[in-house]
Length: 580
Image: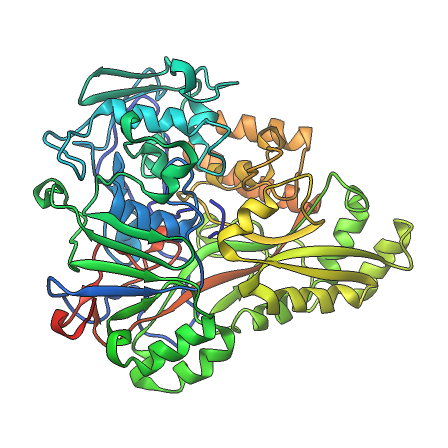
């Protein structure tokens, strides 16, 4: 998923048992990527003990959500927020820190699904008695409807597993004018059946995504549904002023007996938006008044790190789980001069990853990237595929530019989220050493992916990342480098606009492999082959440093949501100390 941070489960599928029926809780799990950060001690642990029920949890944010509509929600933090608080999906992840957070749990469904027809047919049965915020029943038809509406051109940007796998998905434009997908069947109100055009033994992992949340057709308001999703989760929206404040209150029709994951400790959750990132840091460091009952939405700013790591009482309130997301400089391979592989390789050699790492918060909160896929897909550690020094090789970059007829360099521009301006400056300075003059364009985080997803009007370079939706190369390389899924607007993942026939044929061949270990090795090899064609340059693997107020309990960075706080379990030590 976009690093927007899409979701990473740590439960590693080692074999594709295509003839098996369903999945089981007994699937093997692999360990977290190696934690190299000795500065924080909260990784993989829960901070603050068990919360008490009640009170108001405040989330301090520098941005609005990209999308809360489940058909469009494919940003990691937004998915965490949406699927843990507002709507339920067929399956979900356990609410536990560390590797257990990558294990699947039934959510709307009674079990983890049943496969047949060589893993091309998947059947799920919903739990009885599930209700929306108005007390009306959640039905299988509502899940089918949201899957169908995810195809609408008016609702771009969401997960596209349905488009990639469902029979008859080619050219489908959503349920407008009564058109429906025959490959999603609902024989009764509690049963939903998916017919896939190719085997997909990992399909249960896809049903964790918001695409597989229910939306009743009577509540659908097209693009406006983003402002008021209809709740099937423990909370509902009381008010939502875009870019200012979102207030959630309890959904009294949510039945905790049907939900083994969400604890719903706070009575209210208030998201305060539009704050400056350093303002959030300072407020949480001080942790006075209502700020004691607050958490950070955005990661700790690099300049705030010394204020936190030098104070043990503050450091104890810092979460710093690895995102397992690879941040990359992605180049527009369909536009000159980046249609020349020599120019793209020059960028790879000119980049000073050490400077970018420092701008991102330093080695205490980041690891340099040496491959495309994160270390979790390489058995724990990325290979150093290109062997380029971390500080770059400027002379090699100049040589490549000369060979490409650009001996005097050239001018270009890069789009970064406004929170990554210092990263953009580090990229600007390092490429400038080779004669590549870079202009920086900053965009508000909530509009960032819509901006770079407009392929006609975007800049030559973008700084973005990708996270596996679950630990398989099939959720990384095809989404970032398969040219067949590039869209003119709402383009997700393939921000290098890379179209390479050899690469796409190899992706199809790997996807057809029935031996999981063989496929895993093949994805690892393809990672290096793509990197040699230089559509992008991996830069860093970030952690997600998040500060907590002193009254916060039950908080941990969830491995499956890129280190974001798991909103299923967070709450307050003393609800009486919070204010509405």
